[in-house]
Image 1 (cartoon, rainbow, N blue to C red):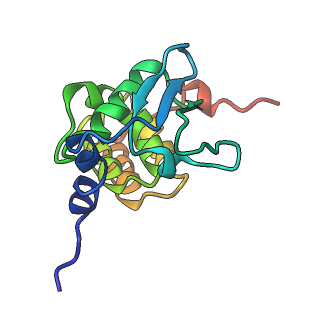
Image 2: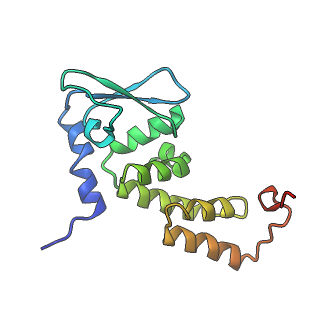
Length: 165
């Protein structure tokens, strides 16, 4: 029996809902915007104790961890076939990596991880090493650590490493 890949799992879900023109059941709103994005098929994924709606209502969920542009990129990915990241999604790979982890969207997490690794440089290597810690992502951690080690980067002047007494 063949195992289902993250992409197979993903493309059988929200992308299928978009193709079938399901009715809107959720409005997503970023913390920095009064506008919302109406989308179908996400209510179950995003439901929490604070957010319960009947089938006839369109609920609004404010995603506090995302800004409007990040939210738009998130929704764009959710309704894509999930095979690759658009340039808009790539711009927000870090925020979407976090969202993918929070909402357990493994395909988005893998693609964002790959994008983050491909963009590793001396300016972002420490941030990506930190990002890989919670929850621990061995692949991203190893890539960032290896980059730092290979390039023998020294960070004594960075504010993050100053000890306050």
